Length: 469
Image (cartoon, rainbow, N blue to C red; front, top):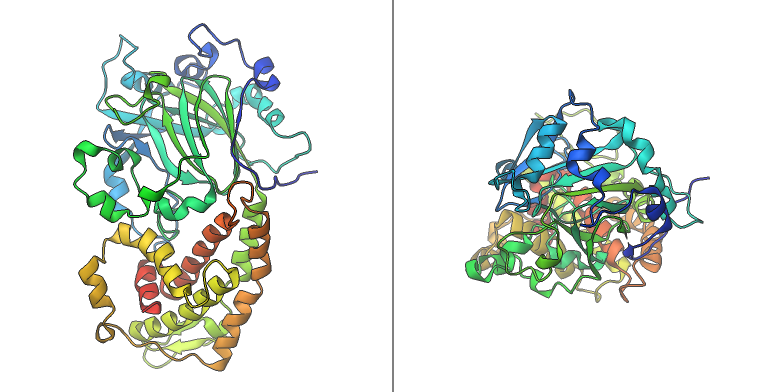
């Protein structure tokens, strides 16, 4: 029988019997020799080709992109400029991973960081039996539905890391070699982290580079202006240095910021001396989460019904498969109707979630969706722009919805509120008295999904700006 793990908080797992018994003995310098990059990669098929991410030193935080059709996801030219991919043999990767370690006298420090991950069953199936112990780290009463890809290996140069982000699956990470600093935050801090829009390839990840924001020597105020909510980010609920044999359990929707080894020449990192100046190797296992299943139900139920769908009619003629679908004649007409529909859907949803005083729903959406997510990314609204945007002469007028459309919007929201209530009452209650963290992340994602369905990914910010004006 398989089950999904419930809601929980991030926790450190240290000195667990499964790890102590099934992993090799720890050497005097705290490393598991069998799982050093050299030893581990030497067991790979040397004729295989590994795809490795590479970035310059100053862009040490790696982010994995979610690819989708153009109309569903925005373009991400910046990521392409910051990170590239190269191919390497297993032995070549082992050499690259040592390039940032000052402890290795045989290598010269590189100008780049390197990061690699892959399911073990794909890259080195012969090693899969070594990691069966991961299941024993879970609670004895849990039989979760595991990621069908199986456990994955993660390797990175000392100083590399992954940008603060959340996953929709539960995650267990075991450190095998080197060290890894992990800072965990509850789902309720999404506003402060200025998460990329869900219509962006880097969805679920913070737009804030922690290093650059906290670098007092190079601060001209630009980042503080661009990310105004980040200064109010509370301390992490868990801040730990993982060493070989340590493990951490990170529940779904919990944010985590990961740094491998040491970050050289970073005087702002109070824990730098605790990290090992060596490549980091870890293994992780994802499992299906209950909040993810509830979120999927919400998205399926909340797909726009025919009265709220828009169909472009070219040349005055269109092929209408459903008479309830509204015909539109041009993009301007689409924007007018879409903004009217979104305003009703959005305010009704936020009012139903009871996360803000009645009458403040539009301000809430603007703050959490546009100000926190889209403004930093697009940088399209400074104070003067906002003044202009509030001028009705610069905007298209919204259209009045029909009675049928208003009823459809109300029904669309009404049928998903019980699912949201389930997220709220069972959410991060152990960590946050408001109990809204996961529900807010799911709700913001839904606001974007509705906009994408109506106008496409490239116009999400514009249509919501129109809807809230």
